[in-house]
Length: 263
Image 1 (cartoon, rainbow, N blue to C red):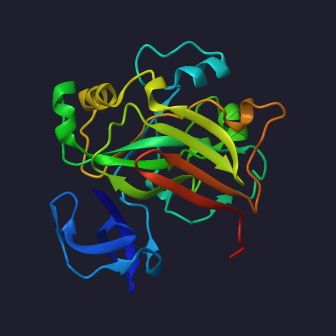
Image 2: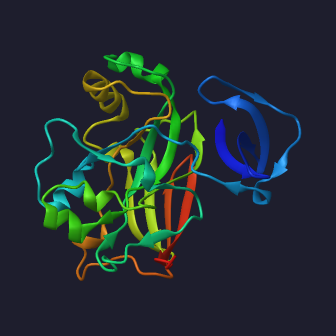
């Protein structure tokens, strides 16, 4: 099942998408969805990020070939960092280049886990019951700030630096799906989640040992090889470009790149 979140007549709603039709639902995915019979054309509403997360937890260096291209040993345990919830944007929303950092903004296609219920200290066997589903994310990164600061918080935290969408897929073999990123149609990243250092069950169980995972929490599981800063010459995002991040079985998250609009 594919769950979407959308705006209609100034209201935010959830729906189930089938064959390019959206069936609006009562309730929400965490307490239960009740599907209504009257379908909407998918293009007739504005899709939002499919969840409004209470927390955004991210993994670094979780693809073997990405760690290889960076020249760093595979982490012995998941390498964690956070993004603020103010960085979230949805399908077709612009990735806005910060005024002070017009260069050095990178793309990172990611499989994203969406937690379905409050959990703490769960085992790997208990993880499937804790997961609502999966979506697509782009861990947009300010490499200039990231390397200058020596840690990742500022470089990962600009507004619009966490596009999510277009849908939450509830039925997915998440540890064996293709993942890709294209910029203006050119393939930049192409891999499979089987190349992850830590699979999804291990990630969720590990995180639950150190923090309570709340319904709607999103976990960005890392990015594969092909990021812009490791290319020769480096490739960074420019205003006017379009970024597409895709995960097999979920769909494609598309975002234009824009310069900051003066207030």
